[in-house]
Image 1 (cartoon, protein in one colour):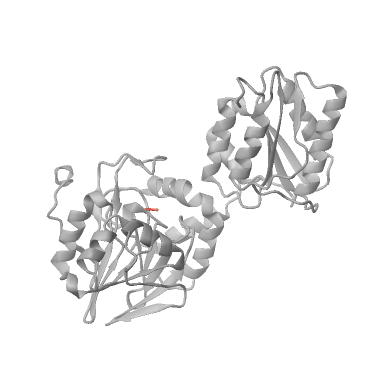
Image 2 (tube, helix red, strand yellow):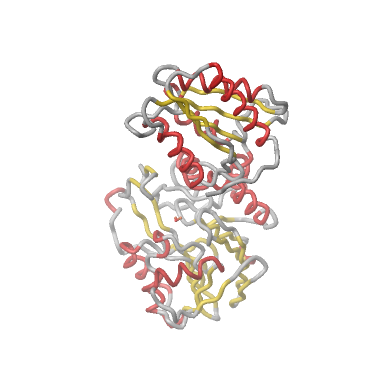
Length: 418
Ligand code: FEO
């Protein structure tokens, strides 16, 4: 099987009556979007629908593979027959071949979500494209196929959408339910075990948009679905609902064992001489004195990244304590902050504190970063203490914990978002 990886005379694969897979396989990719490891490679799935009124192309492929994509298109139709190009997602792994497709089929109308308008212009540098925007409740009737559009933004870009072929009960989901997993057998009941890839993909691509996943599932739940044609990895035709249910479960999942309805405040700290630790503990005492708050303290020097992500995800508020070393926050603090790209931050409250020797820049840097990540940072004075905190300063820390917790509990205060 492996010696056929780079062949270019691939055939389209019919996945439902007159609906074809015209995507390409990329067995050699090992890192995707800089942050994801792709041990099995991946695929860029694209599709073609033939009807007696013309052809619809759904999505494209990465630019470097477009020759294979066009060979497959040409095996099924002439460019003149293409009436519509539906682009569910304009990230370059799917839109790379779209500009050339539009050149070859200039009569085709491009259908995109409203949010994709500026992106389409940016990738084609063409102001004269014939395009139309579509959303939930809009549909396209072509011959014996009815394609209904579904507004499913932020899965995982603002412009993403899905569509559904009514007659075949086929969902074109976009990136959702994808896997970076290359297997030319294509269908989930024929390929190898891709479960780890399916979960890894969710964790790295969809988890930061959990609430949008659940919104999309409310639309998918209204459909009878026999087959999910994603933009990466296996096409899901054996028990497709199972994969929707995985996403539902993961997006609803909470790792909290018990919070009794209380708000969770997580206080992370890093300490050189125990000064920032003492501050963290005083803040913790203050927070715990407030009804409706559960506070926890974590030493950043002794926490696994996967635990850190789960804790962050289940926290309503976070506080980060850091010393300043060489005018900067130490690496473990930045590692904590970089984890947050894998999380949904919507509505979370955050701030920082720390002890310092000379100048104390770390606290302001952390606050700046939290604001840029769209945390709500309350305008209460942050706590920076030179070297060893005095009893009075520890009382300030306690009071800070109390005030932050009241805000976490809903105390009205004018917030700054940037
Ligand atoms: Fe597969 Fe978000 O591109």
